[in-house]
Image (cartoon, rainbow, N blue to C red; front, side, top):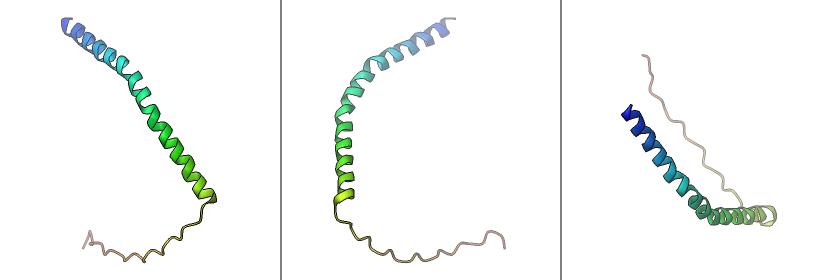
Length: 71
């Protein structure tokens, strides 16, 4: 019974630490999300109104010979 009590206490301790740290992580990532959103808006604007870039023609892929599995 003491082992279960110890495990329960350990689990509650870990959950308490997580409970205290999660809000700081959320507020810390807020600025990064704003930067990503601004960059995405800028990219969409460039794609909508900017000049179209020419995509270079890709060279034709050479086939890779595969080894026979069964003789």
